[in-house]
Structures are given as C-alpha cells and as structure tokens.
Length: 190
Image 1 (tube, helix red, strand yellow):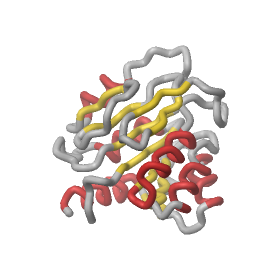
Image 2: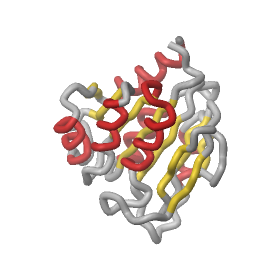
Image 3: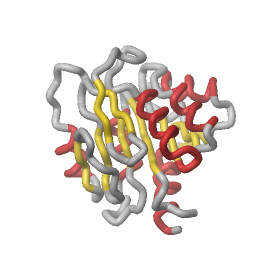
C-alpha cells in the first residue's frame, strides 16, 4: 500500500478531542501520511488546541494556515471559525462561507474536499460527536472509493455522529479507538 499519496481526515465534536488523542498517541514522528483533524470548537473561544496536541503526541501538530502544503509527520488542526478545503496542489484553502450543519469548520466540507483531491486514497475517520456533521462527507469519501471508519458508538462519549454515519454508510468499518490506532500504526509499517 503506497502511503505517500494517501491522506487521513478525521473529524469529531463532543468527545472528539479525547478520542482523537487516543487514536494519534504513539504514532511515530516519522508517520508517512498527513492527517487533517477537524474538531468542532466554540467560535468565540481561543483555546489552544495545538498546544494540547503538541504535549501529548509525537507528530507535529499545527493549526492550518492558508496555502500551507500537506506534509507527512503532521497533524493539521482546523482553525476555529474557518472551513478547511484542499486544493489540487495539496495546499490548504481557508473559507468563511456559511455554516454547514451549524458548524464552521464543518467536517463534511473538509471530508468532501479531501475526497475530491485524494479519491480512493482518502481514509476518513469519524469520531464521537453530538451532531450529524461528517456523515455525508464520510459517505462521499466511501463513494469515491476511499475508506470510511467510524468510532464504535458504544464507546463514543456522544454517539450521535457515529450512529448517523453508520445509518447512511452501512458498509463502513466500525472500530473501537484502540483498533483505529492499531490500523493507523499498521499503515506506517507497510
């Protein structure tokens, strides 16, 4: 499995920070696949997500900047109040258009944009959350031949997001966090 042209996009809301840290822990700094993480955040809150992730994971955690280029070894964090889009040249574009699913950043927007650029080489992971954002984006990834992974709703802090995704993508892979983590590690070893 060629990893250099792959992309992992992960999304979550309520419970998503804890879930994503569990998945990303112990991934080596040399991890070959860029990871984009879209977490719903309060629009007016200036919490430092980057600092939180930097302290707990080996990968470089950075908040996405306009025209920044994707690179392996990074977790790219969607900035508060911006939709994150990917361009064909693998750079980021930040967008302040209308909220999608009451959210900006919207997981759906990023998932769909990633699938448009990476197609079947997109791995989408939807974690715990209290809205349906991410479900149609994950379905879009799946329809483009990419992989759709959903956190086991029984384990999720809030199961609305995983259940919504499972409902519209019956063939998605349902995994507990530890299994998602092991799967991502296995991609490093290939």
